[in-house]
Length: 424
Image (cartoon, rainbow, N blue to C red):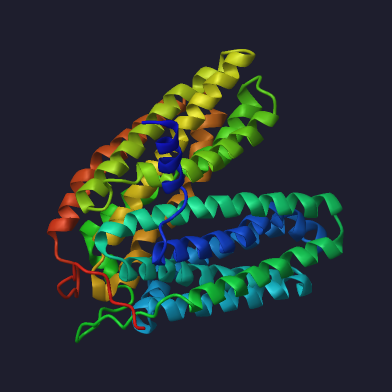
């Protein structure tokens, strides 16, 4: 393959094809600019602009996480009732309104009200966004389209982080207020993108719809949700545990942490689409999830070596472990998208996608404390049982998915093999 062909292939893996896939990727990038900006500057905004203590911020965000956990399934059901595009659009407008109120927060109670409301809105819009992508595209294109969105998301996050650096440099109350108002405007612009997407007809509902929590009785599916959710802990390992390990147990300079975050962004943008191939069936998605789990385990075996090396060799080991975690993230994400696209039934897709995200919410509750305790506070030996945990989860997910695929979904009507034709 010549240099020109190599460049063409690289461009195809980054720039989505024209049509709906490109439109979905474009809205993802626009929305991520606002999210990246706020995530990078939110801690300073909460404490400096709103005058909250670190303890109040932590408590408020924990309560919001609990609301998100409890609301993921019932709020996901709104998508089945009202349609994904309508719920998605309404959520973006509500997000804009809530962010616009942030500068007027006058204490912990009003802060708690805003973050809880945002958590509830995010729980519903996250499901609606995924369901729209699945319903609007034929099965063979769904995982690839989600991969393009993920690549665009990371590019948008990176741009948002750069803008946040400018805000933090200015470091004034006015700059922080302008930051959240800018984020609110980004949500409105994203809403315009979503409004221009093709409208989809309402999917036929069963004569007797399931109750909002009935999906939790689908034990084979919930087993997949838990296992798949646990594998998303690669994010906690990369963003939380790895930096803490570097600071506490290696002689690497602190700047390595920022460099590894940049490495993550670059590799996700360049490789996400390429490594997502083959995950568009339930069996393929399960195998991808297993490969992701084994890569996480391998990274857990490599990382403690950096605790006994010195100088440049430490950096080399850290880069190797980080690269393994990034590859795990890319492959596991494709597996999750494949499961999301194939296992939920057409007529209850919102409830089932919400249930699949429930496992990830459980992971968010247990992984930060658990993995930090194993990987950092033990001094290094805890990485080995951590690796064993991911090997076990990876080994279990393939038979769990096979069982879920054999088991009829609750209240499901026969699933279509075509995309839902957009309404002109």
